[in-house]
Length: 299
Image 1 (cartoon, helix red, strand yellow):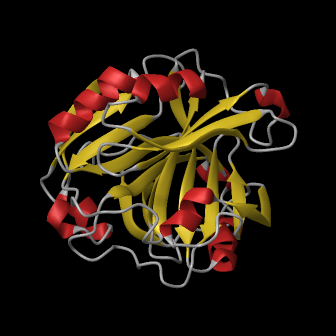
Image 2: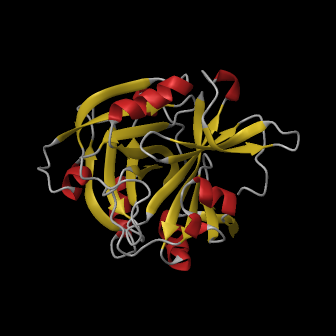
């Protein structure tokens, strides 16, 4: 069973500039730094990232979900033009105030704030980060009325609670999660996704099929059906950027069947404690078994 989001990995064209933006305007703090392991870079088909520096940031308070900035983004990257991880959804206190505070910073306003449902319980806006990474900034008036029911954050900008992923085949993507994990799925349902329609020059009223995989601790994965012209994963050199990997916590005792590891992480005793799997779209996903600790050499 999938339990929670642990880490979001984002490519940065200028690590120092992006680090400063996340600290100054989102209130995040640096907790560690290091370099990408060769084995990990190879497993996610990004060998050029081996040895690249990273820094990991966390929200100032509340649930601690990391955003790991990795040097190596391409300046010509554009979000949602390829399948795979496409957007980070963060819980925030006041989207309208945040829109004002982000004006003139390295974050670019795209759409909103708008209510997402007729119940007017979810108010969200979309912004582009310093490296063209797409952020959904969401306020839940009453989280108990939400399908996911995430833990509220006391910080103005809190933790990642949903990761958005584009798929060339929504059915096969949903089937993968259903095959291995005992988690609830809503959808597919048709939904207007303005930033996705804009990325492909479609009318804003276009409805795109999407599904939501819920995790046991109030987190989720939104899977959007992407147009046929979306690039594959990994994108061609020159257009690589944004989120390239997501790490999740998993209850290994509740897996439906053994996972098809691309790279298993092994304990000193030889037991699998997590690893990399590759989704049907080619998107890499890192899993971390909650009862075990990952070898330090991987991350």
